Length: 346
Image 1: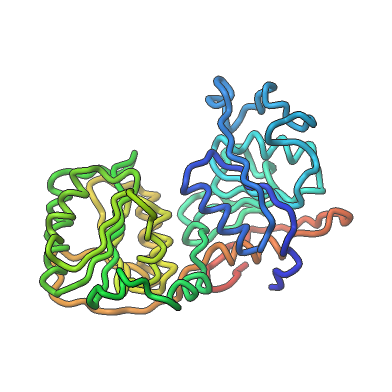
Image 2 (image 1 turned 135 degrees about the vertical axis):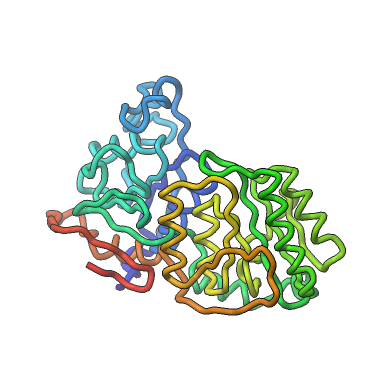
């Protein structure tokens, strides 16, 4: 699919400002090589509570020349994700009409007519004529991007011994808890990697509780490592690029998907909790051959290979396939399109 026709086209990326949401729309926009503007929204009460079903607050002056965020000229493409973003995209769709091709990432909960194209992960249930699915969420870690990162190894990583193991830590959420027993299971497994003389690249997220960071720090202390806890520049992308193996906690769909973009073996640690949706997601990664459950004790590091999952490029290709210049009447397409990371399936 030729994406060069999109290079430099104007786009708006509408999110609620959460890092995970930004990463998804930016990943698709960069795959299309769009010239994009971030539109991070924070609707006032009660419009925040009414989203995604309610309107945009009148105080935001949508479509007026004095609107702080949303005024003409309209973009050629708009991508939105997150519940708070949906009223803005629907309002843009109404004002701009066919001049703006609209895309929503994640189920908007407001119906299939909310955008020209809707992407959802395959473990979600939404389907329709304008719905596409992939195993993982989009992000910027395409094979070419990771290859560029691998061209040079930073000194702090170069001094680490092989095998280099990236440990990507999430934290509690509405689905998963981190009990004392969970933390003991994780640190026991990491202790076996210490005995295998692994070099560690450990990254905590904003959700990682201090007790989990402290436990992982204690079990790897004395072993060659890099430990990022939120201070200074985040080396996360370098950890992904230069890891021989990865250990990722199951609580983040984004982090699991980004690890599976590397093509390197990924162990997933699942704390207490879970849901049917997360189970479907993890099973899809297992069926693809990307991930295995983190063993309680690792005697040796077996290797395995799989096709790296690059959903941003696949979604971008589907946008290119469906997009038409505004002067043309959009064509209707029947049936559900299912997308797989290494190709497009009908």
